[in-house]
Amino acid sequence: MALIEEAYEIFEVLGDLAGNKTILSGGEVVGSFVNPGIVAIDGKLYYFEGGSVSSNLYIHTEPIEKVFESQESKVLIEKRTVKFGTGTGSNNYLWSEFVKLSTLKEIQVKLNNMASQPDVNALAQRVAALELKTSPIVNGGVVFVWKKPVSEIPAGWKECQDFRGKTVMGWNPNDNSFSTLGAESGSKTKIITKQNLPDLTTSLSLLNPYEGNIGGGGFDGGNNRWHYSTGTFNPGGTSQPFDVLNPYRIVNFIEPNFQ
Image 1 (cartoon, rainbow, N blue to C red):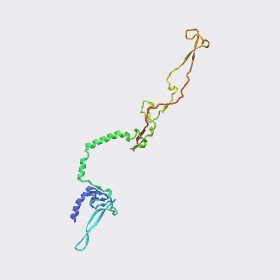
Image 2 (cartoon, rainbow, N blue to C red):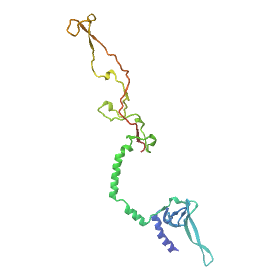
Image 3 (cartoon, rainbow, N blue to C red):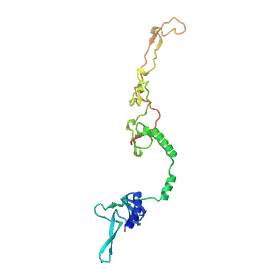
Protein backbone atom coordinates (compact mmCIF):
# COMPACT_ATOMS: atom_id res chain seq x y z
CA MET A 1 0.00 0.00 0.00
CA ALA A 2 2.84 2.37 0.83
CA LEU A 3 4.38 1.72 -2.59
CA ILE A 4 1.07 2.50 -4.28
CA GLU A 5 0.72 5.76 -2.38
CA GLU A 6 4.31 6.71 -3.19
CA ALA A 7 3.77 6.06 -6.89
CA TYR A 8 0.55 8.06 -6.86
CA GLU A 9 2.31 11.02 -5.25
CA ILE A 10 4.62 11.16 -8.26
CA PHE A 11 1.61 11.63 -10.54
CA GLU A 12 0.19 14.32 -8.28
CA VAL A 13 3.15 16.51 -9.20
CA LEU A 14 1.21 17.06 -12.41
CA GLY A 15 -1.57 18.55 -10.31
CA ASP A 16 0.83 21.12 -8.88
CA LEU A 17 2.11 21.94 -12.36
CA ALA A 18 -1.38 22.26 -13.79
CA GLY A 19 -2.66 24.58 -11.07
CA ASN A 20 -5.88 24.60 -9.10
CA LYS A 21 -9.20 23.92 -10.84
CA THR A 22 -7.79 22.83 -14.17
CA ILE A 23 -8.88 20.17 -16.66
CA LEU A 24 -5.97 18.04 -17.86
CA SER A 25 -7.98 15.84 -20.21
CA GLY A 26 -11.59 15.37 -21.27
CA GLY A 27 -14.15 17.84 -19.99
CA GLU A 28 -15.45 18.76 -23.45
CA VAL A 29 -18.96 20.17 -23.41
CA VAL A 30 -21.23 18.55 -25.98
CA GLY A 31 -24.65 20.15 -25.83
CA SER A 32 -25.76 19.74 -22.22
CA PHE A 33 -23.33 16.89 -21.54
CA VAL A 34 -19.72 17.05 -20.34
CA ASN A 35 -17.26 14.30 -21.22
CA PRO A 36 -15.39 12.59 -18.36
CA GLY A 37 -11.70 13.31 -17.85
CA ILE A 38 -8.99 14.22 -15.34
CA VAL A 39 -9.07 17.39 -13.22
CA ALA A 40 -6.72 18.97 -10.68
CA ILE A 41 -7.99 20.47 -7.43
CA ASP A 42 -5.65 21.88 -4.79
CA GLY A 43 -2.66 20.04 -6.28
CA LYS A 44 -4.34 16.61 -6.45
CA LEU A 45 -5.53 14.71 -9.51
CA TYR A 46 -9.06 13.29 -9.67
CA TYR A 47 -11.09 11.34 -12.15
CA PHE A 48 -13.96 13.52 -13.35
CA GLU A 49 -17.09 11.50 -14.04
CA GLY A 50 -18.69 14.04 -16.39
CA GLY A 51 -22.43 13.94 -17.03
CA SER A 52 -25.18 16.53 -17.45
CA VAL A 53 -23.92 20.08 -17.03
CA SER A 54 -24.49 21.62 -13.62
CA SER A 55 -23.13 24.72 -11.94
CA ASN A 56 -21.46 22.90 -9.03
CA LEU A 57 -18.94 20.10 -8.54
CA TYR A 58 -17.86 18.20 -5.46
CA ILE A 59 -15.36 15.49 -4.53
CA HIS A 60 -17.21 12.23 -4.01
CA THR A 61 -15.57 9.75 -1.62
CA GLU A 62 -16.40 6.04 -1.90
CA PRO A 63 -14.77 3.68 0.63
CA ILE A 64 -13.54 0.38 -0.84
CA GLU A 65 -13.81 -2.37 1.79
CA LYS A 66 -12.22 -5.81 1.98
CA VAL A 67 -13.10 -8.77 4.16
CA PHE A 68 -10.00 -10.19 5.77
CA GLU A 69 -9.37 -13.81 6.93
CA SER A 70 -10.72 -12.87 10.30
CA GLN A 71 -13.98 -12.13 8.52
CA GLU A 72 -13.55 -8.53 9.60
CA SER A 73 -14.47 -5.95 6.97
CA LYS A 74 -12.16 -2.97 6.78
CA VAL A 75 -11.77 0.01 4.47
CA LEU A 76 -8.87 -0.83 2.23
CA ILE A 77 -8.81 2.38 0.19
CA GLU A 78 -10.98 5.41 -0.52
CA LYS A 79 -11.90 6.14 -4.10
CA ARG A 80 -12.27 9.86 -4.76
CA THR A 81 -13.84 11.22 -7.93
CA VAL A 82 -15.25 14.57 -8.96
CA LYS A 83 -18.94 14.70 -9.82
CA PHE A 84 -21.57 17.26 -10.68
CA GLY A 85 -23.67 18.07 -7.64
CA THR A 86 -23.53 19.78 -4.27
CA GLY A 87 -21.21 18.67 -1.50
CA THR A 88 -20.99 19.78 2.11
CA GLY A 89 -19.07 22.70 3.57
CA SER A 90 -16.02 23.66 1.53
CA ASN A 91 -16.43 20.59 -0.67
CA ASN A 92 -18.08 22.65 -3.41
CA TYR A 93 -16.54 24.04 -6.60
CA LEU A 94 -17.94 26.10 -9.45
CA TRP A 95 -17.75 24.42 -12.84
CA SER A 96 -17.31 27.85 -14.47
CA GLU A 97 -13.97 28.28 -12.65
CA PHE A 98 -12.37 25.21 -14.24
CA VAL A 99 -10.02 25.84 -17.16
CA LYS A 100 -9.08 23.34 -19.86
CA LEU A 101 -5.30 23.27 -20.34
CA SER A 102 -3.76 23.35 -23.78
CA THR A 103 -1.65 20.41 -24.88
CA LEU A 104 2.11 20.79 -25.13
CA LYS A 105 1.78 20.79 -28.91
CA GLU A 106 -0.81 23.57 -28.79
CA ILE A 107 1.43 25.56 -26.46
CA GLN A 108 4.38 25.08 -28.83
CA VAL A 109 2.32 26.29 -31.79
CA LYS A 110 1.27 29.37 -29.83
CA LEU A 111 4.87 30.07 -28.89
CA ASN A 112 5.93 29.77 -32.51
CA ASN A 113 3.23 32.24 -33.53
CA MET A 114 4.09 34.74 -30.83
CA ALA A 115 5.62 38.05 -31.83
CA SER A 116 9.35 38.45 -31.40
CA GLN A 117 10.80 41.13 -29.14
CA PRO A 118 11.63 43.39 -32.13
CA ASP A 119 8.01 43.03 -33.25
CA VAL A 120 6.81 43.99 -29.77
CA ASN A 121 9.18 46.98 -29.69
CA ALA A 122 7.97 48.17 -33.10
CA LEU A 123 4.35 47.81 -32.01
CA ALA A 124 5.07 49.74 -28.81
CA GLN A 125 6.57 52.57 -30.86
CA ARG A 126 3.51 52.67 -33.10
CA VAL A 127 1.19 52.74 -30.08
CA ALA A 128 3.23 55.55 -28.51
CA ALA A 129 3.02 57.55 -31.75
CA LEU A 130 -0.73 56.90 -31.97
CA GLU A 131 -1.24 58.04 -28.37
CA LEU A 132 0.73 61.20 -29.11
CA LYS A 133 -1.30 62.00 -32.22
CA THR A 134 -4.67 61.31 -30.58
CA SER A 135 -3.94 62.95 -27.22
CA PRO A 136 -5.91 66.13 -28.15
CA ILE A 137 -8.95 63.92 -28.75
CA VAL A 138 -8.51 61.80 -25.62
CA ASN A 139 -7.83 64.82 -23.40
CA GLY A 140 -10.57 66.98 -24.93
CA GLY A 141 -10.26 70.41 -26.52
CA VAL A 142 -10.90 69.47 -30.15
CA VAL A 143 -14.07 70.01 -32.14
CA PHE A 144 -14.99 68.32 -35.41
CA VAL A 145 -17.54 69.16 -38.07
CA TRP A 146 -20.44 66.65 -38.15
CA LYS A 147 -22.73 66.98 -41.15
CA LYS A 148 -25.30 64.43 -39.95
CA PRO A 149 -28.12 64.94 -37.39
CA VAL A 150 -27.38 65.04 -33.67
CA SER A 151 -29.32 61.78 -33.26
CA GLU A 152 -26.67 60.00 -35.36
CA ILE A 153 -23.62 61.16 -33.39
CA PRO A 154 -21.65 57.98 -32.55
CA ALA A 155 -21.04 56.75 -29.02
CA GLY A 156 -18.19 58.51 -27.25
CA TRP A 157 -19.00 61.87 -28.85
CA LYS A 158 -21.50 64.63 -28.14
CA GLU A 159 -22.68 67.87 -29.69
CA CYS A 160 -20.57 70.91 -28.84
CA GLN A 161 -23.40 73.34 -28.14
CA ASP A 162 -20.98 76.27 -27.68
CA PHE A 163 -20.69 76.43 -31.48
CA ARG A 164 -24.39 76.56 -32.31
CA GLY A 165 -24.88 79.27 -34.93
CA LYS A 166 -21.19 80.24 -34.83
CA THR A 167 -18.04 79.90 -36.85
CA VAL A 168 -14.48 80.00 -35.52
CA MET A 169 -11.57 82.46 -35.69
CA GLY A 170 -7.91 81.71 -34.97
CA TRP A 171 -6.37 83.04 -31.75
CA ASN A 172 -3.91 85.91 -32.30
CA PRO A 173 -2.11 87.40 -29.27
CA ASN A 174 -1.07 90.41 -31.37
CA ASP A 175 -4.62 91.45 -32.26
CA ASN A 176 -6.91 92.60 -29.45
CA SER A 177 -9.95 91.44 -31.40
CA PHE A 178 -8.70 87.83 -31.35
CA SER A 179 -6.44 87.67 -28.28
CA THR A 180 -8.96 86.31 -25.72
CA LEU A 181 -9.45 82.56 -26.05
CA GLY A 182 -13.13 81.63 -25.91
CA ALA A 183 -14.37 85.19 -26.49
CA GLU A 184 -17.49 85.65 -28.62
CA SER A 185 -18.15 88.51 -31.02
CA GLY A 186 -19.59 89.34 -34.42
CA SER A 187 -23.08 89.91 -35.81
CA LYS A 188 -25.12 88.38 -38.63
CA THR A 189 -26.20 91.81 -39.95
CA LYS A 190 -24.80 95.34 -40.18
CA ILE A 191 -26.29 98.85 -40.39
CA ILE A 192 -24.18 101.46 -42.17
CA THR A 193 -23.95 104.63 -40.11
CA LYS A 194 -22.42 108.01 -40.86
CA GLN A 195 -19.18 106.85 -39.28
CA ASN A 196 -18.98 104.02 -41.86
CA LEU A 197 -19.23 106.35 -44.89
CA PRO A 198 -16.17 107.61 -46.77
CA ASP A 199 -14.77 110.99 -45.70
CA LEU A 200 -16.18 113.00 -48.66
CA THR A 201 -17.50 116.58 -48.88
CA THR A 202 -20.45 117.10 -51.25
CA SER A 203 -21.74 120.52 -52.29
CA LEU A 204 -24.15 121.85 -54.92
CA SER A 205 -24.14 125.29 -56.59
CA LEU A 206 -26.81 126.53 -59.01
CA LEU A 207 -26.38 129.47 -61.38
CA ASN A 208 -29.68 131.37 -61.54
CA PRO A 209 -30.57 134.71 -63.19
CA TYR A 210 -32.03 137.54 -61.16
CA GLU A 211 -35.77 137.45 -61.45
CA GLY A 212 -35.99 140.82 -63.19
CA ASN A 213 -33.65 139.85 -65.98
CA ILE A 214 -34.97 136.47 -66.98
CA GLY A 215 -36.32 137.81 -70.26
CA GLY A 216 -33.02 138.82 -71.86
CA GLY A 217 -29.36 138.08 -71.91
CA GLY A 218 -28.01 134.95 -70.42
CA PHE A 219 -24.95 132.94 -71.15
CA ASP A 220 -24.40 134.69 -74.49
CA GLY A 221 -22.23 137.44 -73.02
CA GLY A 222 -25.02 139.98 -72.43
CA ASN A 223 -25.20 142.41 -69.57
CA ASN A 224 -27.76 140.50 -67.53
CA ARG A 225 -26.58 139.54 -64.04
CA TRP A 226 -26.70 136.06 -62.52
CA HIS A 227 -26.31 134.75 -58.99
CA TYR A 228 -25.47 131.44 -57.26
CA SER A 229 -27.75 129.56 -54.88
CA THR A 230 -27.06 126.41 -52.81
CA GLY A 231 -29.13 123.26 -52.29
CA THR A 232 -29.21 120.21 -50.01
CA PHE A 233 -29.70 116.47 -50.53
CA ASN A 234 -32.42 114.86 -48.47
CA PRO A 235 -31.62 111.36 -47.12
CA GLY A 236 -33.49 108.63 -48.94
CA GLY A 237 -32.55 105.48 -46.97
CA THR A 238 -34.42 103.62 -44.18
CA SER A 239 -31.38 102.38 -42.16
CA GLN A 240 -32.28 98.71 -42.66
CA PRO A 241 -29.55 96.20 -41.67
CA PHE A 242 -28.04 94.11 -44.45
CA ASP A 243 -26.73 90.54 -44.45
CA VAL A 244 -22.95 90.18 -44.04
CA LEU A 245 -22.87 86.36 -43.97
CA ASN A 246 -20.72 84.50 -46.46
CA PRO A 247 -22.25 81.49 -48.28
CA TYR A 248 -22.59 78.70 -45.71
CA ARG A 249 -23.89 75.21 -44.97
CA ILE A 250 -25.47 74.25 -41.65
CA VAL A 251 -23.58 71.49 -39.79
CA ASN A 252 -23.12 70.25 -36.23
CA PHE A 253 -19.93 70.49 -34.21
CA ILE A 254 -19.04 67.49 -32.06
CA GLU A 255 -16.47 66.94 -29.31
CA PRO A 256 -15.14 63.88 -27.42
CA ASN A 257 -17.28 62.50 -24.61
CA PHE A 258 -14.96 59.80 -23.27
CA GLN A 259 -11.81 59.39 -21.18
